[in-house]
Length: 225
Image 1: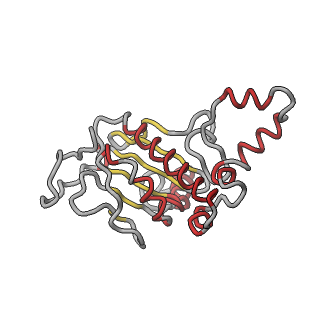
Image 2: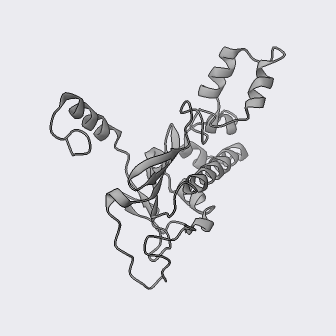
Image 3: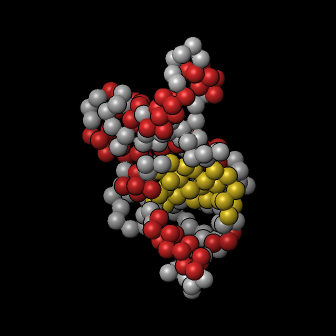
């Protein structure tokens, strides 16, 4: 794999290889928003995800902790440090970007604009954990055709995309050449070893598809409603 595309490595001056058919594509999808997850896609199908028994596992989120050491949770529950309800509320509503920034904000827009050291720390930890999860997900694939960002942060926070991509040079990822986007497309430099794409989140489109499928109407499943 090593970040090579379907057509193998290529120089910056060469034309990109044709994209593989949708049913043969290998991707890492990175959904960053209020909730966050990373997904490995092999031959058009999901084969791994950063989520576990619940969506709480994985990367830090706006207010959710992401993965933490179970030993720490046991320690917090022992010795009357926290009740089960307090621990549950903290993991679900007081952790992630909000907790890492010392309560400043769970919104990356606020943190990017803030001069506070805690804001910078939260963003740095977030970018590191996302990049680490991307690299781990890539291990589930025998090649990587593209890295895709979506979700409100992935779509609309170029500072976060740049910080994540800057940690993934081993996969052939280069810092994005395009920062402000207004449509789906490639943001990596021309001739980059691994294309990086940004796709606008469209959860409502999938809800419409699933609804039509449940009703047995045309357009349900994979078609356009």
